[in-house]
Image 1 (tube, one colour):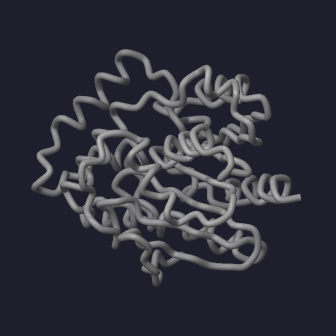
Image 2: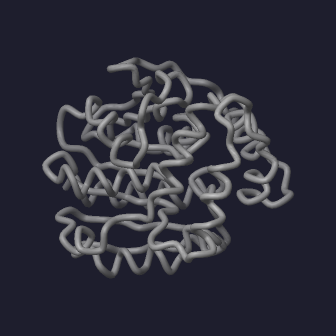
Image 3: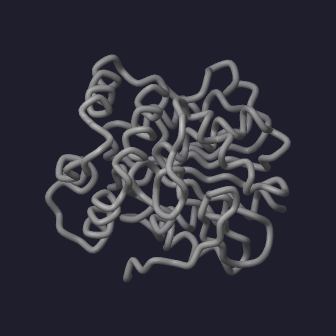
Length: 259
């Protein structure tokens, strides 16, 4: 598909793509990306649901980040977009925000889907992500080569090209602020996870080295209404690279949540 830029509306400085009618689904992208990362899910879900896909602060067409130091700060910024309870779906850092929202604001969340979510990183993985955050100066665009290699290996594709453009275009200060918050986070508190009151889907790729299948399975085991899906052959960018599988799983989950 062509990764075209979609029209947005703005609320309190957050730019968001909206599409479709029906029960609402909030889609939260990861660090360095923008709302178009959900293009295929928007197209696949908008026939039955109302999709709201914001650009994270400091990303896309949203206002610059200002003083955000934690995942919860990003959660708080998104609450202005929610007028009724939603199914919240997040990818990568967006998954951390989605779980934080479900835990802290249960009255606003009917269900949560966490895609490629981290939980209790190893000491080695935590050090690596902190080092990457500290290497960013917040003034010059980060070279996306190493990120693209982690996400796509050496394969050339329209999906890789789209992500490369988004990573080059993202505001350097916004990227550093979000990546630093991402690096500081370690997933949901275990006690909070065991008291999660809504249905919870944890989904990641079989080949994902950072947001591993073991992490998703462990979170699903602890959440009272949790379940895990591991996508065969997928890695970190599965909402893009394995869009049909991801969209079908989200459609099934959304129908269950909103029945």
